[in-house]
Image (tube, rainbow over all chains, first blue to last red; front, side):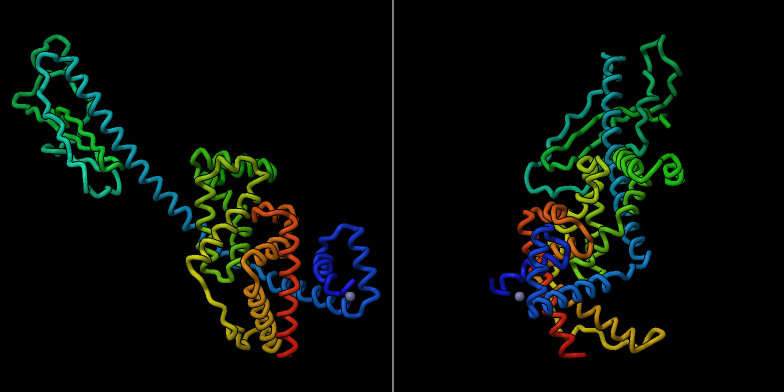
Length: 192
Length: 194
Ligand SMILES: [Zn+2]
């Protein structure tokens, strides 16, 4: 057998990658072959040098830097998630408020403006859902809404004179540019 | 504080890791930080050995851990975290190499540095390190990965095969070729320069 044919096996042998029987064969050949002895010792030596060169430990700061970058990115993603969750929650709350308004005062439900259909094409994808509250700067707090006026007995607080009823439009832009959700709710001027 | 409380509640290493995974899955960033600390050496050092420079290796590590966070469900058991991380590290380093190719420059061998208690000695050490780093660059990407995982990370041939998505026979062939090439490069260099 040509020494060239032993190369691969010797290279595996020096790394401890041969089964016992194969290793024994290699050892027998190397013991009788000066050229393969040199080849084997050169392999062992370069492997040792390589391992030595990679022994040096990395400074702790290098690991800390990676950790900090990962955690900062995850924390940022989480903030964005909560912002989104808040927007969807707000929209849902507005919807509930609207339903309550209809249920409690079926005859006096404010005529909501019809949801506008947005143009379909060419709209840039918004980076995150946004809420645009039309007209009133007041935050809708549907949980605290009270039925207003002439429904009489079940009302928890007397109506405030001069309180204004303002339709508030919540526009929700989703990640899909073709889907825009509008919630029309009513906010009383005294809501604070 | 949260991390400390968490550390106090977990027991030995393996349970530690499983609980860290479970807690991180539930959104506990402190638990995820603990998980990172347990594996950061492995990931960054492997990336450095695969890529050859710290800046790229840190970018790769960051990507590996972000991917880990998004795939915690896939690595539920502590036993396969390391295997999963090795595989993803190799893949991410591969992608990064494609995006930022760094040509091999033979004049990169370190200049003798006059630092350290014995300038002569530290100079030769630095030089030797550069020679060995260069020898890794002479390898194909697959050969380098196989050599790094088998000879420097100490994985078994089977584990290397799993990390590289290839067969054990292929890994053995790549490892042996890589060892022969490193020997040739190192010997040629030192015969000429020493
Ligand atoms: Zn021979």
